[in-house]
Length: 347
Image (cartoon, rainbow, N blue to C red; front, side, top):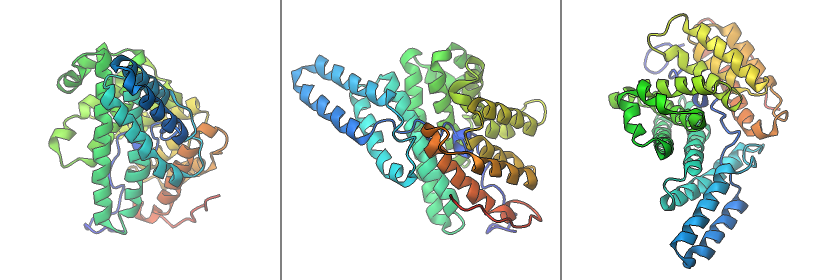
């Protein structure tokens, strides 16, 4: 089947990150950690102590930031993605407001980078993919918005890294492999979310040479993170690399084999309870290799994941299972000579 540009329909783009292809990225397992009640109480607390002097006010702001950064899993365990879509911006703007008062709060910088990356993928970027065939102009506008959100997340991540490593943001761009040697295991969460957001922005900004030129920075961050803590967050780094390996330049061996190794490790570390690694491999590798049989098998495994087995991953799995069903509905567009297959209904 041909698309509007006269070329065979294929994956709209080769996505780098794991959160962005289908991960991703511990997509929503810890998303937007503050509940509305906690946020309201926290804001009230700040207002009550604001008049007692700058030092007390700053102390209160930092305490609120700590609570937001740690948070719970009230959002990640929710079974209603639309509800979280509507609620998340309030939490994100609250975190930005607190960062305006406490700009070097490391935990809050991490939470904000993570939150904007997750929100951009789940509620802007992925829905734009689904809309593209029906309304290309509207989908393009959504993708541009997603790119801006990813860049905002990247910048918060880089600010977080600079809290402990002065001027590292500039050095990551100019000499990334040397720069990341300064980073340690405790930096891995910021490294991961910065790389995930940055890679996603690059994927959506292929018409911006300056942005595309940052790909070595992404690669250096994720490779160093893997070296420091390969099991981070139940396999998040391996899930990221499933989608990244096909785009890696100058690496030895078959990219699909490297991605397969990351898939196996991601599934092992998550105990098969995450749909995202299966979706990521199907979308980024099976389509490229025109392997429709493996494509269907992996998406079938994604749909078999019990969303209640890990309640804190429920929302992420629901989002990724939706993407699996959407991909299955496009088999005839993505593969030559592929017979249509029924798409499993949502439970």
